[in-house]
Length: 240
Image (cartoon, rainbow, N blue to C red; front, side):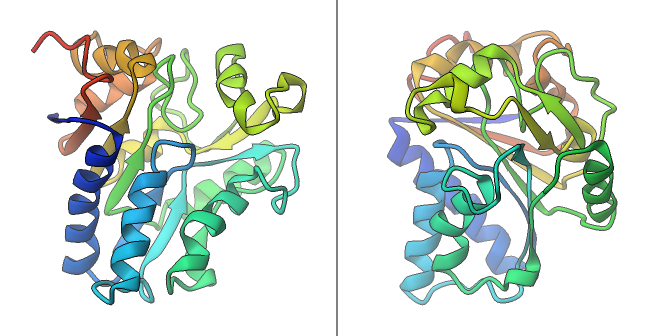
């Protein structure tokens, strides 16, 4: 793993965009693995700003998203479909048919997305990391060998996502469809972003801890090309 520590969230986002821009300018039809949540919002703002400045385009870019909630309509304002359109897809010239997100409620729906991923060959996979070390919605205890699957969200993940649902845990979906760790590990390059002291334990486990299913992100220690970009707060418990 290559670890880069930045001063704050904005600096982290700008540094992340350096890697993103290298990917999308060196390969016009690059395949991106995209993430949602608050962590990559700054990166997406950088992507949109550079596009509007006329420096990049997305007309041949293809994307696959990590995950989606089960149990809410994809047009719900807090669905990841809505998130991606609001923060990126509607603001650049990516073709709608080139964007892919998991959708559905059953393992059969997960299997259908897994079939798409088998031919995806993702060039750059963007990841955040949960407070409990999850990547995508692969919660602690998830097998490293698993592909796209239906996930029962843990109480800590539901609590962390309450802020998007009027701080009411009863409104937060209890399941999600998620790429598996096996899918993530097939990506040619992985870019992990983390910001804030509440992520410090997870970041330490990912980088310096044992490789264990109890910290799903620790699987990335076995990937040949991982860049971790964190702010000072998220890096505060690293010993190296």
